[in-house]
Image (cartoon, rainbow, N blue to C red; front, top):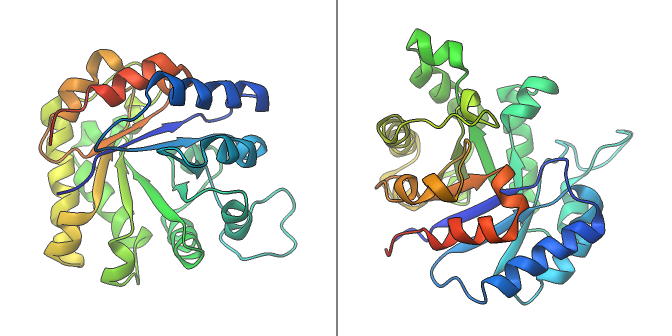
Length: 253
């Protein structure tokens, strides 16, 4: 049985005091969420402080990005070892905003996945199609390529450590949400890819999240889908009460 995971990606929001207030609000507002993993992804500047506040609680911490090299002359970049040292256990890799605005390729995603795993960070690997690709009908091929290149050369053991997040680019921050039929179809395809390229065990163990304008009003329906194991939440994770409602909307498993 896969344990559901709800992750909040705070993006470029929250000063250190605001981040501390938000994570404390989640802790106080929901003392124990039962059978669910909860992750928050603050900006790098508050990663250490949020990790300290979340310590000894049910809340795990994620970075929003990582550099693909161990160290070196890469001004402004953050190494996987720095993330681990700050107290985080997860890292978001290949988010569509970084693919779009920072020109991240599937090949670079693969390097980042491997460096994260080497440093015992759990990658949350994002995949998803643009509106044009959805309308052209080749979105499955697009997502399978992202997975094929992004997860290249991983062993079954390493692949089992992954979390995959399906985030249709056209539904991120737009208020648009894919239909439950569209969501379940892609999640089934992702799980079939994992089974074919790794093993049935990997396919059955890897959690596949949905992201794309998830909020308390629509989370219950989305999270009830058989192949949806949780959500990668954007704007709605910036409010503790709303984020808690999403966590609480998970159906019994």
